[in-house]
Image 1 (cartoon, rainbow, N blue to C red):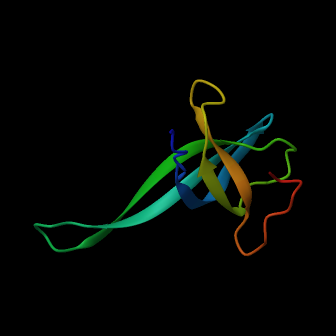
Image 2 (image 1 turned 90 degrees about the vertical axis):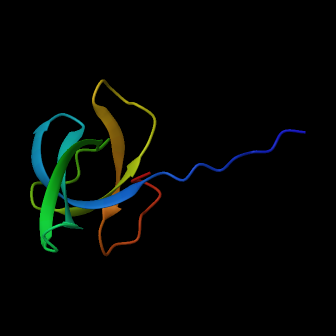
Length: 92
């Protein structure tokens, strides 16, 4: 008897910083980390390429991205929707 394992996909919030590619957006995710020795908070940013099928999202939009199967060599996230809006059937 096999059990179906439900995989949890990472969901991150970020800001669209580039929309120059077709069906792809670059999303910058900013996080706050704590340095153990110096006991200070500092910010770390990462940029991820995310899939946007209908080219809806523009630079400056605050979006939610979810990890998915690899779509291309360096694109393995897809945009779920804008933060603060409920995801619609069309955006999935």
